[in-house]
Image (cartoon, rainbow, N blue to C red; front, side, top):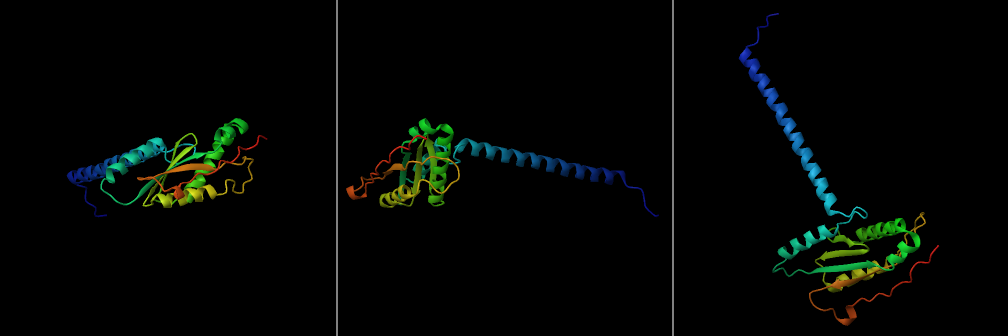
Length: 193
């Protein structure tokens, strides 16, 4: 056929190159897998497992970063603190599974009502914190009023009882004028089945 025997030095060099590529590919695969696993663990540690929102730890980290970054900045940054009305009554009358569903529903309403750069977190229990970058206190009051006007019971087929509205406070660098203060009326607790 006219083929000449392979030079052992050339064959050894070729095998070394193939082996080096395989080792490099394996190391790259392991590094990518570890990076993905670390990102998943970081996400798990920073999100509330029930609602999928940021948790208290993530909010504290974000607040710390924002306070360091905002030194000398004049753009507004407003904080809303929300609490579900009569949440304990929901848990007591309907059970914790229904209370969990109410929290998930409220988290969905919050997520869908905010801008992409607003930070929504579950601070604990039925308490939620929303950071509104670029919005002053009067705009935050409008957001709070809009949230309070959101129908608490979108159409559903499950037997979730009526969810009481949220009430909240707006945090601003200076006191709000009396006309801008929001004092929502508390809704009555849901009736037991």
